[in-house]
Amino acid sequence: MENIRESIFGLDTLVKLEDGDMATAINLDNAATTPPFIQVMTEIDEQMKLYSSIGRGRGQKSAHTTDVYVEARETIKEFVGAKDEKYTVFYTANTTDGINKLASALITSKNDMVLSTRMEHHANDLPWRARARVVYAEVDEHGRLKIDDIERLLKIYTGMIKYVTVTAASNATGYINEVHHIAKLAHRYGAKIIVDGAQIAAHREFSMIGCNQDENIDFFVFSAHKIYAPYGGGAVVGLKEELDKHIPAFYGGGMVEAVFDRRVCYAPAPDSYEAGSPNYPGLVSMAAAIKMLKSIGFDYIANHEQQLMQRMIHGLREIPEVILYGDNEYTDDRVGIVLFNLRGQPSLDVADYLAGTHGIAVRHGAFCCHPYVRRLTKEPECIGCTPPAGMVRVSFGIYNNETEVDALISAVRELSMRPNVQRAPTRSGGRKNDHGRPFDRG
Image 1 (cartoon, helix red, strand yellow):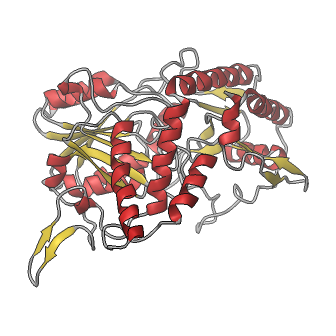
Image 2: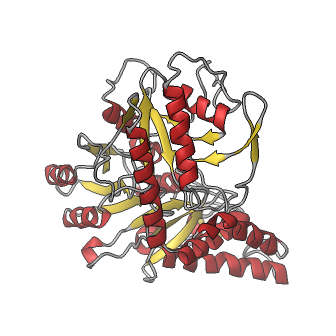
């Protein structure tokens, strides 16, 4: 399906290299953000012609905008297999925003217990740390989640753990977790399950409904910017009855039935979770991207990224100076992510070299999951506030091809033969934060 590349906005964009030459950009950092579909951009342009206030006006444009806003909820529910009426959808800015809203609503006491894992992105760790008592299931030597450790902790704290929160697919290694099995364990011990779906949504078909009711997912959170949709946006799909029992620490217009001098009547979910004017372009793009992904098909997506991943692993293995991380023998339980380092070269320098000399974008560092990365690299936790040295992450999108894989392998081989080269930082990779250290949001 090579024509998929014709559906991606900006693939022919030229970027300036260190020597002043121009080159076509190669994006192998899709786990962070994907480029948009052209069809999504077209849909946004069309819908903005009728854009007006949502749920607050009587004009024709307002009525149309409100209808699109409401109908998108059904598109999202169908996308994650949650058409049952017990589920509802509320819109968010992204996965981080969604998990923070859930944490602020569902956690009612610092004594509430949450079971998380050492695999989690900071977005599915820090919001719970700030509000509850958190215990963590461990990962094995390859970085896979130990399901037995989840059950061990549920047994130790029988009846005390309110929520189990786990990623469906790691943003660092790409490992896919058996979240329906984890849901069954959580429910057996009286807990509900929250799934961070940020990395799974663009790579695998996902259903919140399991083989039986015990395996159903209670809450699922994902972002639009990782499924080929621009302008921000995301969603939480969750149990309406449970959401109606709580309210997030985020207040404003649109979430109330009535306000009096000394009391407030809040609206039921999802309205109570959507204070303020909604991000209409974001939800339009999210719904349009979902339809595009479904038309392409997740079987194709999974097979395509497996082929690219195997080619990348094979090519990097032939470079003696390359260190690969995770289990690179069995990759069926991974979305398209490869982690590596080059001996004698910090990951920042490798990323700068790839971008500066070849126009290849990758991610370096610890990928907003520092405890997990330390376990993968065997780097001890240090005193002070120094993040892990980290790795280089290559992550594939549905539009990447073998030519781009080979370009990265060739560039890494080239760099491996120049171990002492000092590269001038690229404009993005060389930015410094307020403390004078290389800028890296992870």
